Image (tube, rainbow over all chains, first blue to last red; front, side, top):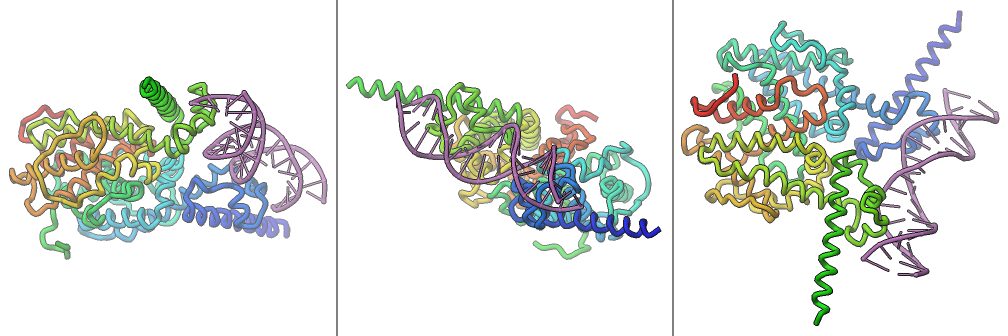
Length: 230
Length: 230
DNA sequence: GTCTATAAAGTGATAGAC
DNA sequence: GTCTATCACTTTATAGAC
């Protein structure tokens, strides 16, 4: 019955190599961009032959998808702390800033997930958003931690619930569709990141100002609650 | 002195071939995406040898840049008609819708200009935006026509002036920085287009609703002036 | 100006030995 | 599991004949 222990060790070793492959891949993508990621380069980096990679991943695309899932988990993890802010508008503002900050601090990762191939975006989100088209239901189930089962959906819920709270407080028109607002807000944040990454002359304004201006425009300027820069 | 006429004809022929190259390139990009654009494919399409291409363009990148400039002119041309709308908010709304519509109708072109390589974006805008950092000056010099000298700048001015008009009319807070608002608005529109192109599950809301919601949030809902859908 | 031919360097992926 | 060796291609770009 030692076989099971041996099998287990082998499994661990296999997982370890898989991790090394992803680690090396991430390094290459961050350093040279996704287009420069090739099986040979990865193999060189981990000092294995190219053929070995195919024992752990089906293809280059498979590796890219794994990188996306990893990166998306990191993104969620960097947003999670702000989910506990009590005041809904401050919460939205903090999440918005964190989202943009992540995108700018992890350019190539962000690019890979959201600006490369639709199928990459898909595998990052894990098809979460495609699930229930329920736009207006359920209390805040804040459970965006670690791994990524329905993670995208959870993040989306969090935003929608924040807007619902603002609606209940009369700070957002009752006739507004929360789903639409969230999508528009996401578009704004993505636009700020994406344009900063691809358009050399954008923006003249600091990104923090852009985010604040957007939040203010959508949800009203805060009533002398937090420190704001002129 | 016939030489000049001959030289002229030769020049015209050279220009014609240059156009055919770009035409074929555009077709390939629209059909198979930019990644699939290769010198051999272009040569096959126009029934010339690959070597000939290098008499008209320095490199593949050079062709890409030319395509960008072309595409950007088309974008400006599709926005231009709406510049004549008198009411500033309706003008902004119309331009916003036209911008998004262009991006969705010319996916690969839009991708090439704004989502591929910073240097492509650069050559499309012709360094226009980099020019004067003047944020608040000058009346509406509506001259975004045909070719593209300072075209990007002109489009930017048009938006800024519209916002200035709204400010003067008291519909936008006087303390707002027009430059920042324009950049945020652009980010929103770009985000809507970019996410629709790369994120398969985005959006659940129709893009027209997203654009309208954004314009309403930024500049207030119109006072029973135009037809709006519920 | 246009061609043929080819250089020089990559690519992803696989068969089969060990 | 891991390797060597290689297939079958792709790419951009250029030299030199015509």
